[in-house]
Image 1 (cartoon, one colour):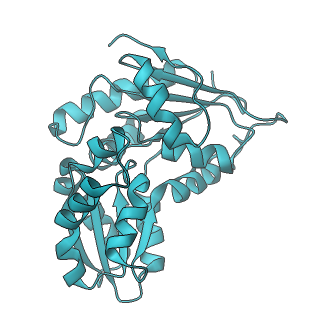
Image 2: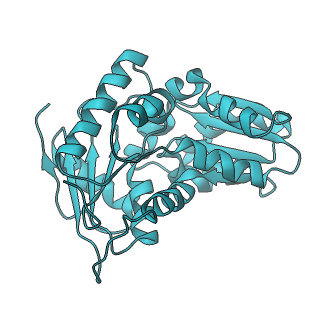
Length: 266
């Protein structure tokens, strides 16, 4: 049975969703959170639609069984493919990361040329293009899958020659497109902001949906679900693979120490 003091549930295919969790903790410091990283089955970006749907439902069910009051789909691929179905089937609020980022991009762009980078599954789904066009039919959307960005970030390579070469290879065509706004359509990509900004230049606004997603979570909880207690919330972490790497890499994402994580069997 959920109540105001139940936790916020957050899931991702792996570690990237910690960027979203970080913003939720900053925005709602009193709230308890439960984070599930499906590290054994990551990445989702190269999986089929059916597989991503199944994984997303399993992850959501795990959080629901833990008694969470809201589910945050902190994975662009899962949001693109499964959000609508999850919202239909769960009896608690479900928030994704695409709509909040799109709203920020629509407000940010002056010349109505918006770029989107993400995993193969996210880009192929067309979810960002549909959402941007629904918000403003006149926006031109330029999208590109950048599959190597995730392994680079998880390796801890965010600012070296290999990263620069990869950014140049993926984003070269965007420089010619005249975009003034670029959506980082994967929760790993904010860790590459420095390299992306260096290549794209300061005239291109980078949109990280984590901040906007946290605001959306706050808005959903304001309808009678905000925690009543004082003091800071407690944060629990669960993973589907060995927790050691998650703890080590997770510190880079969360901006604070991930003390421990519990492994669950899948």
